[in-house]
Image (cartoon, rainbow, N blue to C red; front, side, top):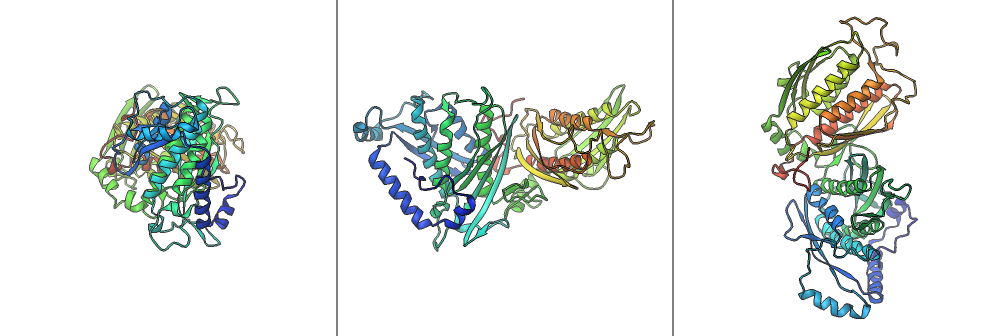
Length: 548
């Protein structure tokens, strides 16, 4: 049975807000649950369900489906909510045995050594995941005190219904990218302190994860490990209903089924962390982030701002790196200061920005990126620009990426993931970044198919998309469009990061697209590199480390 069955699958989001009646819904849910329970005894029960904010649970995760365990563990690593739960089988053969089995389960210790002990028969996994979603959702609801929340600046209003707060997060996992939006509806007509679930308005309003990959196409994967992918929706439906959250999970892209599912759980976990913190990404979209900054939300400055413990911890680390390299094609010097930079002085050691590569648009790109990232960056390059822009552009991007990776160190204790938007002219780009040590760049920027048919990245001071007929060693060389893409790829590869760039609006020129990308990239980097003091130097990963 499903306690949220009163929700019409065709109801629109706006209708949900205007028709919501918490007292009626609560009654309907209880009646529906009681009726279903009377007709069909449960096969599974979840014991020792736990969700502890910013602490570890004393209970293990033992759902009986190995891959599902791994996904639930993402709440520990990325939401920083200590989760534990054990699923116990109550009914093995017939409904007549349910009462006896339930009594035995109280005194029995389940054999948890078989991580996939409950994966068969596969048709039972929907009920198992529903029970897990209901148990964890109830625990999450206790963490989300809607009465104590102040509406964010983007809170939605309509006919008395208010969304107190929304949190949006996109998680990049190699080629996969999933967006999660969590919204807290305000309790209606309640004068006493209550959890978000008191409103009874939790609902999964969007779920576009299937198909799970393209192998085989168009069906995708039906099982990942021993977990049935068709049952995942039941988990998130019950999680939303029991937590009182309005949930949207949208696959932006992804060809690998494992990556799509893992990206979804990580995106939900990160969105939940931001929701509890009162922060949000600056990626725009349907969330409440500030599209003109690295992030937003009522508590953003206290958690991540210049007066926050995070900022102070970064300054104490004083992370920096230098690199010099010379070949027959280029001679490059890079100095990078990760903390306390972004100023206008020329010395990177003092936090300033100075870029002189001999390729004008390349200078603009890295200067903009550094400013938005708040880093000090000094780049000097003498290259064979009389040949073309290839060697200089590639080598500078490689050197900056290597310097950045060196300054970041092991990445232990860092925030690690973020998404942010950037604008320049008509262009708007969102960059989602993960300091993963697994280099991967995926984008849909209008480069090869740009509207103007441009071959070169031309800044506002240039009058033509054509390069100088005979550039001298002292003139500023143009940057070809194909080399701009190569710059992004080299920077991401040598920086050991996963990056997704999503073009929201095409610029009137490739230069606008490039600068919007630089803004978004810098803002995302600023937040990924931020120290999360609550992690106490531990790596934000269920593996405990970031493999190279």
